[in-house]
Length: 126
Picture 1: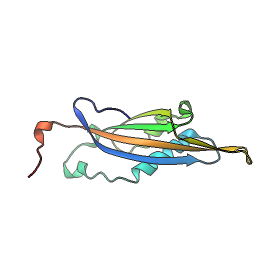
Picture 2: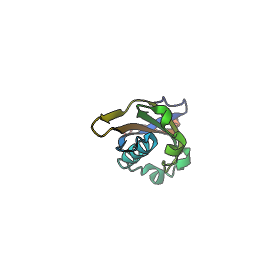
Picture 3: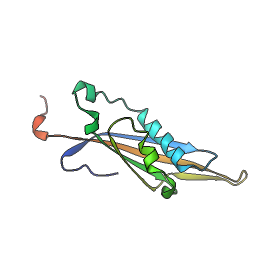
Picture 4: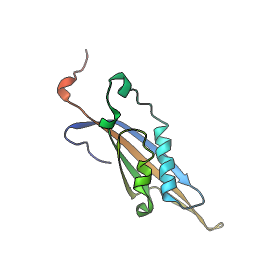
């Protein structure tokens, strides 16, 4: 996960898991994990506050056992809003089925959304 830039604040953190049971496709597992995370959230603040979703930076961190096999550009295409930045790191899980000679890939993702926030425009209510 990444730290917010000086002019922005993290407004959303979602997590998801995905798998590819038979093809050992790390990108497919990562995309499924992104879809899982996205199905956990509904972001109404863009309409409610008239915020342009292109102002949002979306940082996706994918954890898999072989991060170099994730097509990060392909994963970024799955994000419906904001400016996506995807990185793959060591994590997730491979489950080896020695009887069948297959490896099941399990990916995990953290999706963080950041918006530029001027702290002077906000105050806590009583």
